[in-house]
Length: 161
Image 1 (cartoon, one colour):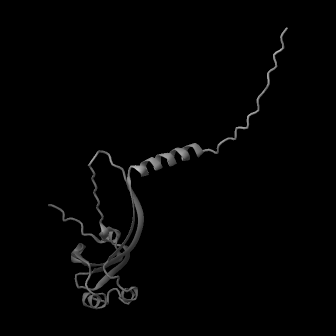
Image 2 (cartoon, rainbow, N blue to C red):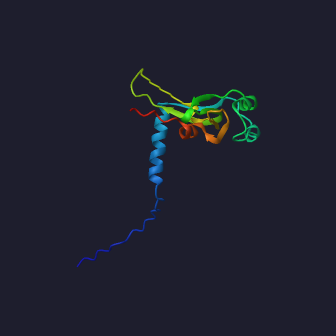
Image 3 (cartoon, rainbow, N blue to C red):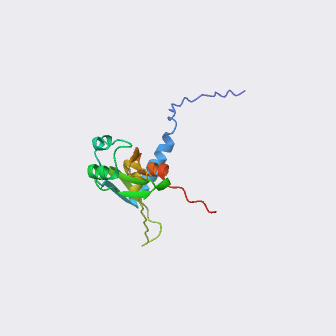
């Protein structure tokens, strides 16, 4: 009779924390991309229009201030349009932003590269919308993003009869 001794080998396999293998794979992929791509860093500052003074806006009184007084205190607006019921709407806004970012570009084909960029700074303007009645007396003053405020006071299309 032959006795076979089975020995259990103790192995000290430390378990990897969850996600370590994925993190290592991502790091290798990023390193490979960095070797064959272009990485750029950007710092951008955008300034558009001079902000109006909050104190000057607060000094205006509904039903008392008129268009002439507003233009004297705040200056020329950046937008003017006709609202509902022959109302006049003036918009004052400004933009002062700083942006930091980076971009990675990976070539897809030899000697071919394409790039497209679009930015609508007017959609990020902070400011005031002032609504005047048909007699040019101030009715409403609202503060916030001009894109949101403009939707509140936009004229509705005329009905077709």
